[in-house]
Length: 489
Image (cartoon, rainbow, N blue to C red; front, side):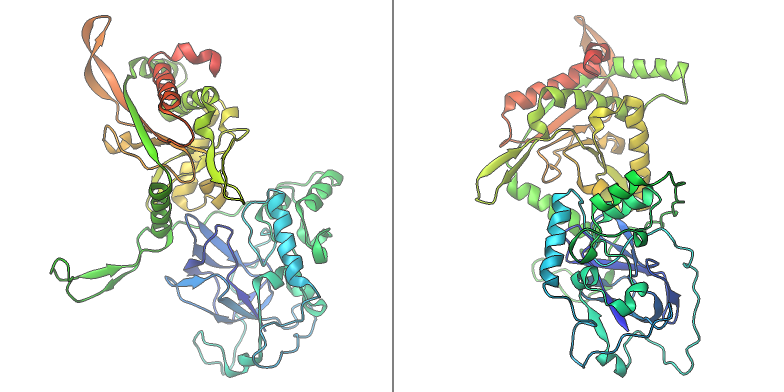
């Protein structure tokens, strides 16, 4: 029997909330079949099993938090491929099979190699999703078996495989029952999009670990494959932490306590991020009132000519922001400290433009990668796609954590301005208030115009007020005179 430990889901988290089991005890499962849905920092993730066999035990119930490295599911890997079950180790052992010499070092080095190669989030312990034809439960007969999720007494001698060892040390007798040796989600995604099966690839990394270069070489030498069908993402669970009745009296206020709500999942991550922003970033704020009448008239004219293909206001504002960042790149940098503790400013070769999206699960900030390369129509399409993905829980961790500058349209809540908090570890956020009719002086005369307020919050360590003011004024001028910035778009 093999026990799969909850892997590091690649977001620097220590635990995840178990949302839903996709299998039950007694089910027969295949390698890479999703067995559970867990909620991490900001996304809903299906966790596939690295083992094939019969589900022996489910460790946890829906709504519980499971620490990374703790048991998630136990699988009896009996003869699914005509192979004998691996012999049990003596009671108290923590590895089902002996790892090859230097395995931990090899796993660590493989992790570092993938990080240097730009693989991003690391999901240790299983391979490429794709063949999920076995999702339907096929419960095996279990005569005389008592229910419950606790392991039977004989399980004391069964093996628990640490996550790192699962990715590197695989016993020859059970190789057919386990996932390919691949620890990078980017590599798995690259293979999936190219129609490649990782089981057919030979890894060039330590102990056969499949790296990105192996997939790229296979793609270069392979014929064209039809695209693999994508699975419909699971619906996102409703936001809100578990609430437990907690009688008692608050000693500070003297009022009775009616409940205690655990701060976990998304809310805990948001809280930690905002606290880090307020604690570490010496922020400053500048704002300006803007006459958006010309921009609204421009968009209305486009909509009359092409009602089905006119970008939304956010797409136009995004284009103006991107043009402004080209002139004032300091606001698209990041203040960090290197290994010796010295301060550095990191500059980037593009802009991953984040935008705040309110969802049932809380506030999320998906980002458009290399937004500077997209037109207003392309930006509009990406904004709609990422908003839908964030609200359904299908947005990837990379899409939710890779921004370099954030655009926040809080005007949709009917407010004019906000003392926004920078999306740590970025250096600036631009907020846009509601657009309403207000009196405004035009050519020396009072007129009713469409007014909004722009607010820029920036890290004062990366630039001074002159840079921040110059950027804000550039965006404001673009909104008031859209034709004046055409040469920069």
